Length: 147
Image 1: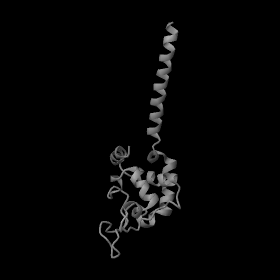
Image 2: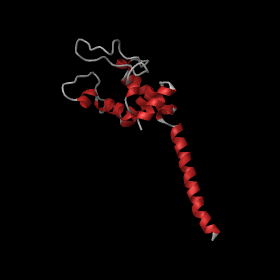
Image 3: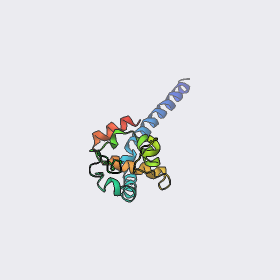
């Protein structure tokens, strides 16, 4: 009788421990902490993004002021910009579909979508690379808004 009672509790304990272990593994391998994902993201960023957003994520000069064409220059993706102020889902959508598609109306932007050029996994790798360059406190703040 005691054995029959202990077996279900043992199974529950194993399930709880497995969940804790999986959670710890997930936290340790967040994309912005996964060196392979970051390396892939940097390669893609260098080829697809750096020409506008800068090789060091610095953005274009005067990125807060509209140019003669009425469009804003590419913002920085380092902590001096506003990238980290947006949740993962929004950053992904902007990268995939472009700013104009999301804002709509007559809004014009040089930020085109990469839907036809990059896979979802590649876009996520680029975002992981960008996030990996931020200080830990900014990463944590960003992660808390992206849950």
